[in-house]
Image (cartoon, rainbow, N blue to C red; front, top):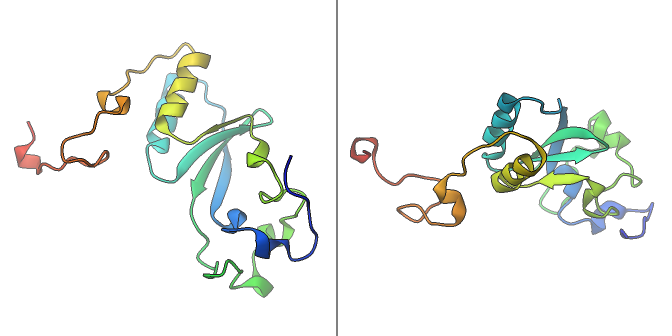
Length: 150
């Protein structure tokens, strides 16, 4: 069960101002292999996840609002956009349990596993996804200059 809803100044208790640190867009439900390939490409980028809520698919992008102050207050409160004015404590992330999504894919591996379990599409899993570190230690960058790569 989520936290008790408080209609008064609830935002000052919500750290780190969850509703101001991401946005989500509804996307078409994937149907083809190409749809899933595109989603795998998107989720390979930092701060991107997908979720399913009430049988609808959404792309979520973690991105802090530029008007959110260091103390998690809205720097443009009096002139904030409509979507911010309409945000309600009834749908607030602070009072919810992990958003209540049917599925939430926070990584490439999670989405790939779901595709394998729920579709007939098969994708090869790259060896670097098995936990083996890449040369140079960083999991996302090839440390060798282009000329030195084979």
